[in-house]
Image 1 (tube, rainbow, N blue to C red):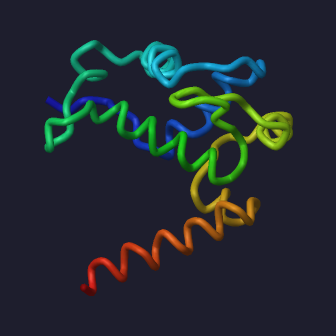
Image 2: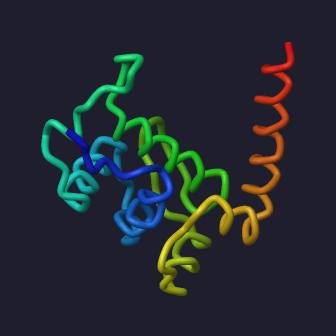
Length: 128
């Protein structure tokens, strides 16, 4: 059975839109909101990664959170909670069709720098 679990890139814009009102949300609140947004069944929302340690959807949600945080579009005022930043609100005012890592690299130096370091780090780990 082919499940329609969105990838990390597909989650980025809906994630940011879901916190647009400026309130603080727990990652579990966001998971619930985006599960409804993407119309995932319980089976899809809870499908485990191959490692069996967490759901594939929640894993992708956490990656989207990390990307948005590294671009400084959201902050995490306390553990497992997020809040949109002024930069995040500015981006939403532009009404983008989508947000991608390429877009973040091009428009947000902090994301570009983090992505560059992450790539070097993963390359050096593979070479050891």
